[in-house]
Amino acid sequence: MTYALTLVLSLLGGGALGLAYFGGLWLTVRRMHRTQRPKRLLLGSFFARAVLALGGFYAVVRLMGPRWELLALCLLGFLIARTALVRSVRPAPPLSRS
Image (tube, rainbow, N blue to C red; front, side):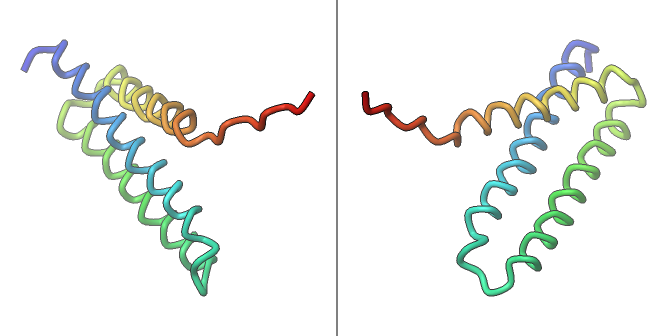
């Protein structure tokens, strides 16, 4: 595998992890008002998402090699996914009545 492909895969892997993590958070928050035990839902969701994210970062380091730039690109992809999700689910600002 070429080094450039490894860099791209690391970035895409981080993006996929970010989509899973923050998408799961968004779904959890949307379900909070419909559940009987919101604390249990929030705590269970947090642990599941944390295990997924940490396991994913570990897999990137383990499979692609312990290079700091690969981990940094994975984290960058994670944060790009967060930014994209925040912008996509943000409600529209209210129209001003003037």
